Image (cartoon, rainbow, N blue to C red; front, side, top):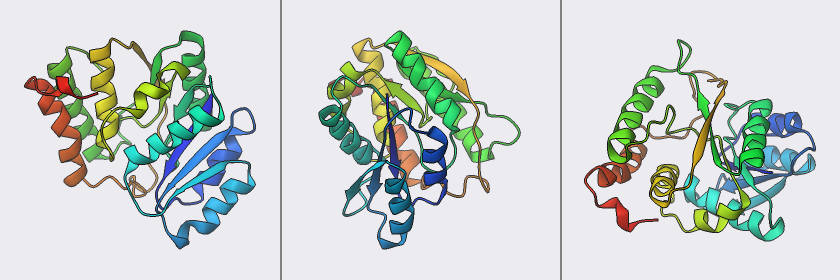
Amino acid sequence: MIVLLPAYRPGFHLPELITALGDVDPAVVVDDGSGPEAAAVLDAARALGATVLHHPANRGKGAALKTGLAHIAEAWPGRGVVCADADGQHRAEDILRVARHTEVTGRITLGVRTFGAGTPLRSRIGNGFTAALFRAATGRRLHDTQTGLRAYPADLLPWLSGIPGEGFDYEMHVLLAAVRAGHPFDEVGVATTYLDGNAASHFAPLGDSARVYRPLLAGLFGSDAREG
């Protein structure tokens, strides 16, 4: 498995994560137009052996994921991918466990967070509402529709590159397209650390939420079938 880490203005949690992952799996970091202030962090990631790709300007998480997926498919043909957030939310052991699950099963695997007392309120409410909409639109129950920790088998990489979405909406499009295409997926429980109330997140509550809900609402009313 190749570890794919989309990053926008990353902090030193990124090289700390790469260090914790060790040399078991190669890591690919896609810098989504972070600018000069991220140079030291990205240099540290590169010094630890990560491949660092760059977008000259910020294009969105979906665009960063697709850049990484295309590079991995070319550089490591036949290898699966595990995508994780670069902001310190995901533990290295959970990333590797989700990756290994897909290696064994050949299925998409979602790292499902526990939304307990330590979870920021907006995350608990937002995920619950999104999960309810997803179930209404697809008939599938998922406990965490917004997780950024996801593993994919190698044969799905070309399919993933063709799914629409440039921002946070891309990951929702992937779930909806997987249901339509009949690609099975599993959920594996993981721990989640919210540092400083998830202050490192670049998710804009209004604009990005609207983009995430748009494909869900389209699926609910039957117009999303044309996508993916």
